[in-house]
Length: 92
Image (cartoon, rainbow, N blue to C red):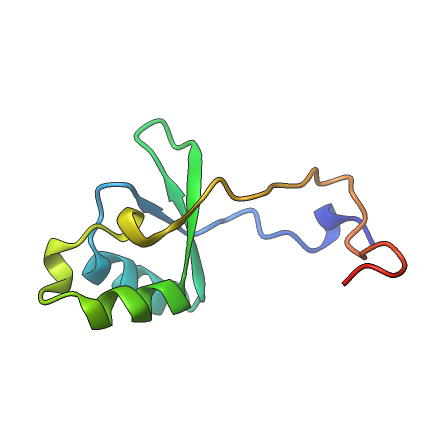
């Protein structure tokens, strides 16, 4: 199956200036476990999974004062929607 058959066009995002509290609210409202981090030009700059949210929140004295982007994974890999969704034989 091609990725275009399973991709979600309404990607849920968090902006580089949003704090942990805003990211948590966005995840909860959209019922997702990961957010795409975008800059002012809406270019993808990272991903912010729930696991990173939990870690960052546990370490922060005040989650509203910490930027989600500071704890996001940078340079995420992307794929073309025409690519096959299955991994190649023998791949993990």
